[in-house]
Length: 149
Image 1 (cartoon, rainbow, N blue to C red):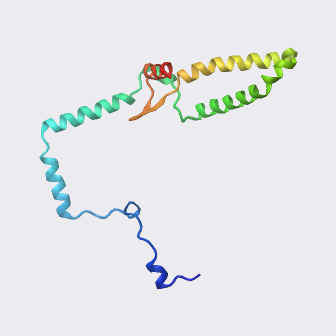
Image 2 (image 1 turned 90 degrees about the vertical axis):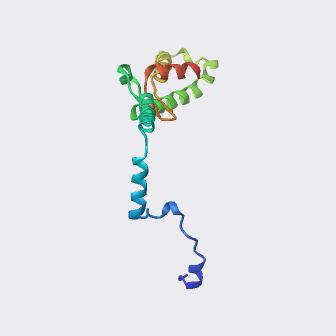
Image 3 (image 1 turned 120 degrees about the vertical axis):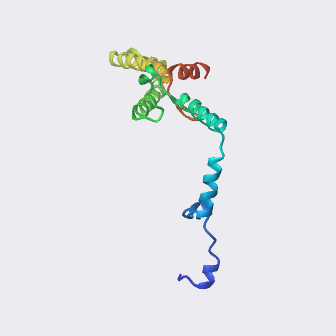
């Protein structure tokens, strides 16, 4: 159907967030720069202290190099492996009632999976997490969060 002038009146306005930002007038620019000049030294000191405390929350310590980022490729691969292991366990644990684990190969696979789940405890302990101000990568903070959860 072709667009007519009647149907154009029915089209709603676009949201202000979707519009490109308007250019500030010279008066608005001068007003905001005057406001900045009026800031006292105390205000600036408070602002800098606030920024330093926020950045300190995200700062990496020397041991944090072994911490995995929660959205990293390594962590994603680990999570996919965990899903595969859970799927394997989902199908094989009920079969244990019928002597499924009597075969040598199955015993080896079960040993590998037990080792994987033990390593998963360590991997979860060494994975950063999202905090309010960023991703927490300090080992003592990730350890505390893991032990509390």
